[in-house]
Length: 50
View 1 (cartoon, one colour):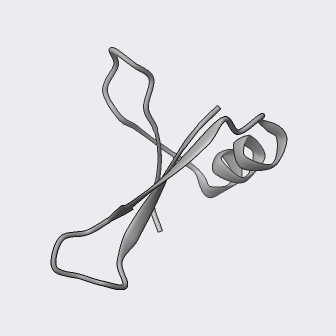
View 2 (cartoon, one colour):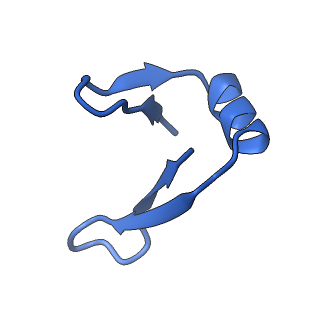
């Protein structure tokens, strides 16, 4: 899996799994947006906002 952090107005930055887990477990999640890949029913991404 790949994990990225996106800040508005900046480019996407790849982060480690550990950094993702820390943000997911310790951050206050405001919204989660599931993004399904076109043509693939079982492949999707989660975009979450903290």
